[in-house]
Length: 237
Image 1: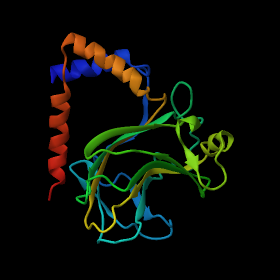
Image 2 (image 1 turned 180 degrees about the vertical axis):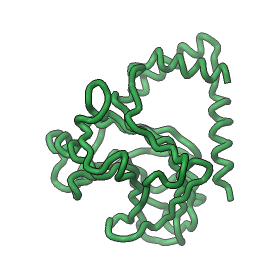
Image 3 (image 1 turned 45 degrees about the vertical axis):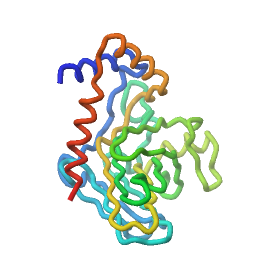
Image 4 (image 1 turned 135 degrees about the vertical axis):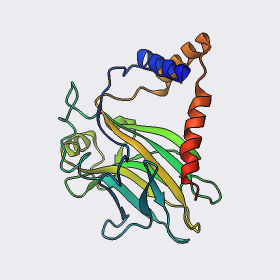
């Protein structure tokens, strides 16, 4: 693990947010960690079911259905629950980013879901989305809470002023998952959902850090692949 640890240290030294702190994190060390789910109408039970598998939140889709099925999977206690994200934790007082790992194993035409977004619910009714393009298996994703990065609202509030106002009263935060049609028992996973007090650097910053790794001859990707495989294997039933 020494090479992996050294690589992680270099990332911290080279990336722009080396001083970023985790305000709060859910890693499902016990049960569902206050996470729950509801369907897209937000008035009934979710299509899928949640379970804790080896310290990872597993999401299992229901029966095959030709229609559009969406679940909102969220934590409304520790991460949200009328939280003021403009003044909560960190040196600057603002929550700047959410980051997490997501597993895609739909088992249909491909393993990725039909849609995936980070979302937050504000003031009991206003919903904001940030679309994610997932990969098969495990992937690492983030969403900076910056309006110009691609957040949008479909309720007539799609301006930065509304976005910042709605960040002062967050009731829920999590992911919106759209299942593949006509595929039963799709499997997805969520792990290490974190809120950070600084934005995550753009990919170019990590590319520059990667150049440093290559120059030093430090390649730790196989370690990451081995780690993801160990978690993936726990999902296989």
